[in-house]
Length: 385
Image (cartoon, rainbow, N blue to C red; front, side, top):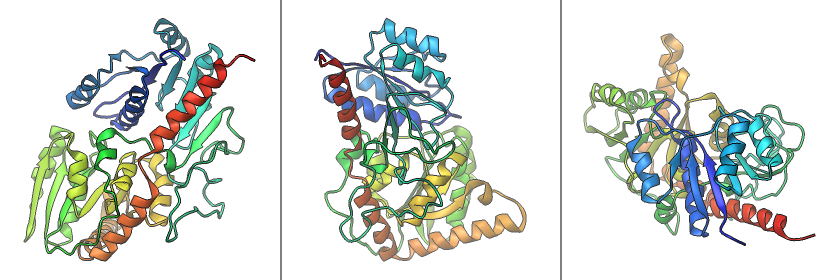
């Protein structure tokens, strides 16, 4: 087969966040490692570190086509064999138009396919292979010998609008989690052990831009635990840094704001506890065996957040709107989150239990499985007869 030409369509920015770009970057790295030619199409706004990541890998960044006709025209102009769509904003008709034009189309989704008609779908969320919430189904492999979930081939789509099988094949579950080279290479060979420390190292980050402003809220909740800690907070924007700077640490506590960094995997593995949003970074935390406490910051994280917490891969701190609410309800939500965090900070065994389950659930090979599926399908389509 000649060199495979792959396009990835995604956007990133201070308000959009970087989750779509990060998982596309992970796929791009795998395609490049297999000898494919890769181009990213989209807008990356005010994120110098993100554009530098693409440039360092020699991946061109071109303006993103939006409509179905524009997507087809871009695919033809660049002679693409495969186009990956990772967006909540693109015209859903684009996938079907690409497919009809003979371009193999992979749609990355989070529960809801938005009516896209693709050749292949990827939902990397934990438990996505299950029939959906309330089904009573349990996830496999969470006993003493943990098997990776989500390695089926064609299952019904869970979440909003589901009920019928998708037109194409669905790769579902955290067995297909897309992780970058820097995360995979930092994965510890064994489950991190329980370690007792008097002043735990805590890392808090909420995506590459913290689009919803979670960092100041959770910094205040962490301080409210009263537990000694050395807290590092990733601040995605200047206004977030200003708010974090205004938080006064308590006795035995330090707060260190730092900008987004390519050293994030190292910071994660060095931390005794990580506090984060329940987005795409969840799978990075799992792969690295990080004891974590998660916050659901946007609606489309809710189902995955609930499953992850229910099955003991991370502790749950609630939803951001609850933690920012005024009155009695808001104070109660923040107090509950602070108690959860205090329990984790004071118990190395609790942290180790979370780390073990997380590490056993995401093995870092998800992107290889996805690219295997793409290559298999493209090869099959080129075989005569």
